[in-house]
Image (cartoon, one colour):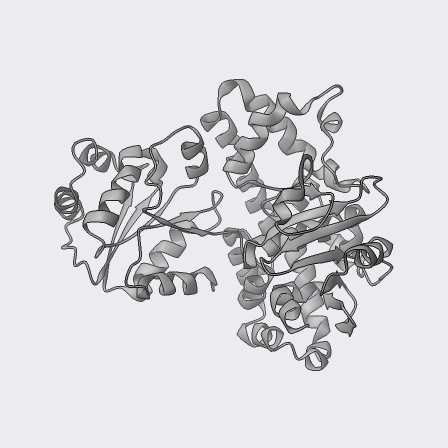
Length: 436
């Protein structure tokens, strides 16, 4: 399958002064596949070390961390000669061996000629627990589930992706039915690589659902296996409450939905654990707008989205027959799926700094506020083709943004500062904003 992240890996390889690279992301989003595929495409040789299943490699890093010694040990273990120019060294599940993580500092300082990529499904947890980390000596790449653009590439082909990127909306409209149908499928299938691969080959929704159930079960196993014992029940309570939280008209996270009398301080550690795992996206509120936007952040109010829309549908028991009911799918759970979809795409395409806005009275709410560094863009999500957006108009009148975006099932339209963009063209948000 096509993953846009591989292009960033090529950019990393071509930089003369690159540091060891760490790929972050939740379990089963495709980190191992991406590293191996990149090694296959871009190098004549690759050596792969999995610290979760290779005990001999754990022993290697227990002694001193001199690079020459480590390279010799890896060569002896793998039976491959490491040519610094043509061999990719892959360290998988690196969080299992903190000394291996610490060794990246010495690779960076003493042997920058080696090409090293690392990944760890629970790396965020390991770092939060105080694992020694080579600050400033590594680079990062965040990997998310497949975006809709990547899903479209896997199911309908590259040509429809290229057409979206060209932003020729008169021509795009001629094939609107293809984009809308693919979007409905994506709402159900989501972007977990195993689910997408199964669907692209079989078009079997039931088989996809079984894969999603297995992934959710594996995540819940991680709760018990890796989280501190005392917060495991709270992690499960937060996790299981997310569909109900997003089904509300006001999608602000309410602790009272978890249980009566619940308070934020009781669930702080559990929420942080889920976030560090990459299983949830936490979007905090801003109550005003200005540079820097982070200065207006209100940590007491936030929305919580899942890592993947397909998993949200599975947790919510969304039935495949919903796909057949016209555009009903897009308004399911009061638009929860559409907001989840947009949040997921924003994280996947550029990991844009994203917030949401409400005024102090709560009478005006804008679904997403995007901090692009040089501009702050409000973004409203409409589940179908109803374009009434009173809150967005109020926001525009008050803050006078250079551009405002509205995503819906309606066609592309540009009116003064406001751009209407189809939900299936969410990958073109940055380009649309820059062109306005």
